[in-house]
Amino acid sequence: MLTAKVIDFPVEKQPTTGGAAWGFATDHVEHWAYSNSVFTPEECAQIIAIGESREFKKGNVGDKSKLAETRDSTIAWLHPNAETEWVFRRVTDAVMGINNQYFKFDLFGLTEGFQFTKYDAPSGFYGMHIDKMLNGVVRKLSITIQLSAPEDYEGGELALQFTKDPVLMAKEQGKLFAFPSYVLHEVRPITKGTRYSLVAWITGTPFK
Image (cartoon, rainbow, N blue to C red; front, side, top):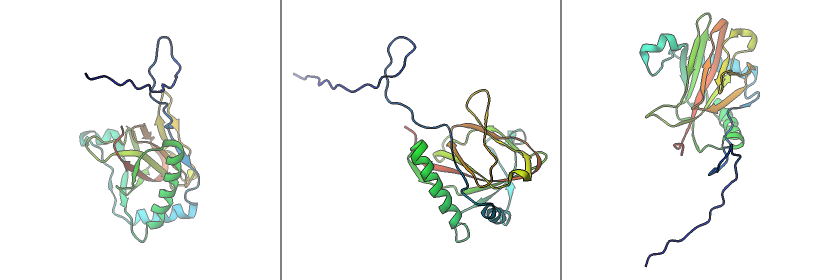
């Protein structure tokens, strides 16, 4: 005769609003995190010079028929080489520290390189979107590094949307922001000057 073995699992108690709850685990993933002064102003200027030496193209979106109403920016791509190795190393160290403390995602690396992005007044912007892709690489963390000095432009705030009122990221030069790639966000329209940023998506194993 077959008998069933009963295993008692510890159940974490969670607050309820009435009735019983069946808790698995507590979610410790932060909404966003940052690292101050990943690059100095001089290093930011150096990265801008590297980016400006590359070939630019218009930033794209998945549905090209909605490009005009979704995004207005120009981009260039930076990949690991002798000129950019120090940039990749610095960002890798910052991201690993942030991830270990605030997200604890299983990550592979910067498999898509850096997107060097340029937003020019009076029309540069990137409307609300998420970075997670369907049937593409598994983007787990999105990062943005402010390369421009805050006095060089107006508008252009990076805004993360968690509730009705968005959270605006600071404009400190050299600061790195990280957030899960499924978070809704935008770059608000530039009204004066030019905003440069370095954007990347940290890939990893599928969420489960």
